[in-house]
Length: 310
Image (cartoon, rainbow, N blue to C red; front, side, top):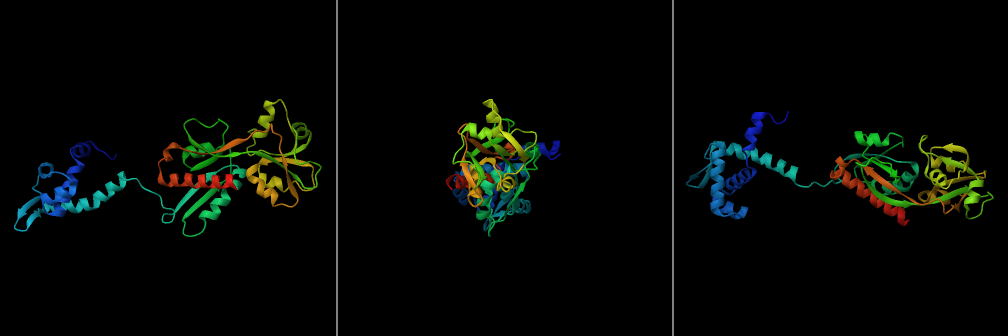
């Protein structure tokens, strides 16, 4: 227990302002100069000194031929205050995280499509000197929210599906739209109608085995269902399976560059019935005012802005 009964009773009698005023009087060696520095009247400073003397049951400072002189008890108290007051200031002053001076490790998780969209910016911006931050992306898993609750994760990247616990803090990062990737030599045109989309054979990505993905949810709301003969958990791996097939892979626009850089693939416009959605960054509210976490959220905002404008 930090605050025992006797300690609590003693500390309740302490006025921090008295300690500050005494320290300034001791440094200035006089009430007049101390009052000017403190922007207080001389009578107010004199009264505060009397209260400090009563608190410590010591004169603290006495008059001498050279002005004010500290008593032995006063010297000891001033030495303690020289260590204590900067620590108190550090407690109450807003702190700022400096990634160029302070080493820190951030633990994040999200599906691979959002990681593919955001992590290139983080790598370009923060992996070179003089930054001292590490981004540790953990595999996306069903208990990510529980890991956030327990402090095993600092932040998760999650779709805006309305299913997150209400007490968690979140912020929209960017809007995602759907595109389709197919083999370059496949029979598909530049766009797919809903009828063509439903007739096609699909390679489906389901990031969590027990959770229905967004396209299937949106199709189910229309009373429709697509045909899928292959399912896997990663968009990046799914792209490598398309060449030489007539499969359709539905993925987010943030992965467009990966498709465009692959000469064996091409992009087909998805049916308009597949509606856009938003990715969120989600964190526990205990971290909202933490300087490290404040910096992390701003870094992700910048990454999302870079993705949205690329």
